[in-house]
Length: 172
Image (cartoon, rainbow, N blue to C red):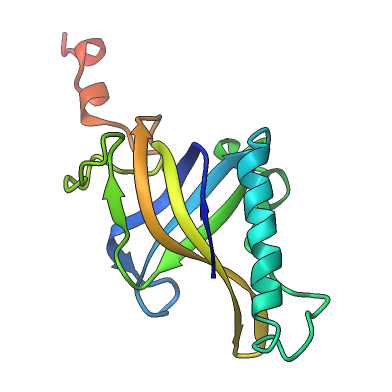
């Protein structure tokens, strides 16, 4: 497994405090990491880690790397063209059966589940490894740890109570 520490990314679909089952699968912790296309350092580290995972996992992949191998680095402009949060970005979906460690910029553990959310910015510790399951072969991205660096506009369309009931919406 090859570990990558990302640069500053935006968190999306953050299920990092409680594992969630997707389509009846085993519950997992997961997050989509949105990486700006101009963060060449992080993208290059991820591409290199994927290549290492291919070589390390060649026996798991059947002795050779298949032409249609699934890889976790995706282009937001192609795969999520209608989601402006993914515009001009790459993304990887990272998951784990073990709860990730979550800290703030001062390395203090984040316990308040409202502090880390889809839309905030931070860094991630992720690993890449080969898989071969149910006829599907590819490279997966495992979630290790997360660090929140700053707040961002929440993703998911939900408004904040402070905005709904703030001074702009006083009953008159």
